[in-house]
Length: 265
Image (cartoon, rainbow, N blue to C red; front, side, top):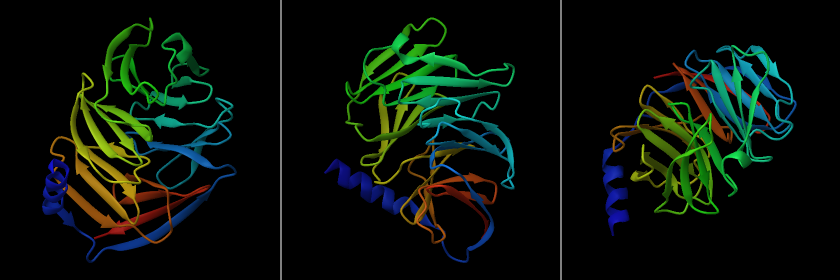
């Protein structure tokens, strides 16, 4: 009953802004390998991870500006580029995370075996020299000190996140998406605060307190600190997997290509 009330409340607050919108196709970026991860930094640079373990960076116009070839030799599971000076990559296999430090000549690699034994489903950087790790096997959210591998926090989850797809720490929150369960907002201690039940969310972006994701034919925006405030716009046709947003430009991620569109409302 509570779930039905929550869904009804969200629908009441939902704002559909699909009228009088116009999509303009700007450019298509073709990649040699399948795209497995994506992110955008605070300068609007686009980062793409591939099945071959490559990470590519593009400017806002879709021009390639940097390539890290086979940085992990395994598919890139997650990229977090909110700190553009230390871009974070997680590789579920072989359970490693890497920092691409702008002030270092080579990537800095960490093995999760030094942190915990349970298989890590998702891993993301904290905002205080820490790393968050989600273990779906144990249904537990942990926070570690990067330097000494000490456990800073360990919290069993109240919900099942066996299909967790992306995770990001943002201010005093930890945000996790699950392709079957939707989006979940946890506080800095790992306690669940709010859930947005929507299937098909495999990635999300947070920009200026706004959480943006693509699910089905709709681009949804949720206010991180007032999650009842939701807007939706209709995506262009194309059967895309995910989307990145910067200004009035949207970068629609396909299997091995990115289509850049400009939106006019």
